[in-house]
Length: 281
Image (cartoon, rainbow, N blue to C red; front, side, top):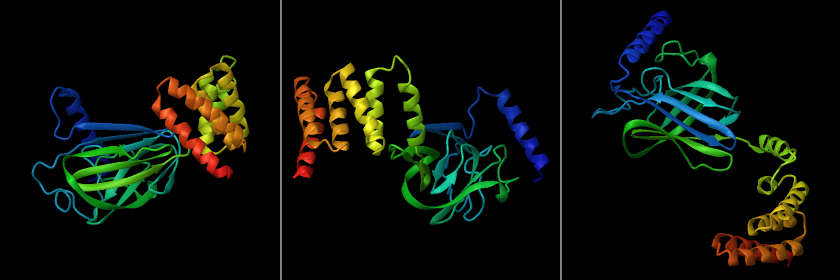
């Protein structure tokens, strides 16, 4: 099939779809998105179903390039740079091609995003090619992309179909952008206690800008003294070697949390106090 015929086929499909939008499609379009750290990750794809067929090794042959879905190629878009399966990928939109195997798949991210099927695929346009082991899982009738194991800066992109499952790690680094956002937010004259407190917590979680975090936590408490702002101040004091002060602040925060009947903060303060007391011995 030539590129010209591929384009004509895609145009014909688009025309048919446009004239019959009120009819269900055999492989309906799906979309899933997730914010990972500060990066938006969006997957667009068409979702074929098994319909009693053997999918992998039959409908989708092993060891051959596959569009990873139906109709137009599946795409993935990143609003910022990521590590995809351990490889660096710049912000942008890419098509998702795969080579399914019995035990291991190869996933290609490709710059060409307007392809129909495998025709027109050029390896030179790949920005990443990663090998991912496949596992057996519960039966999934319709091909599904989903996000799982979401953490501060990472998540897993999971592909399920039939009894096959792939887990592709996506890692971002929100630190640089987070610090830039903090500087912008705190430069405003009307910055509130919450902005100072959340800025301190972000940096304390990542063990950066500890001196600045202490100043921000103090300001947050001065503006709005609550058990949660006091807890952040205690953490900032501890991060700056002020263990005695941190324990005293955490004890006050715990008392305030007890009065507010907030068991979560009672426990967090108690745990921190025990941790700092042990470290001080």
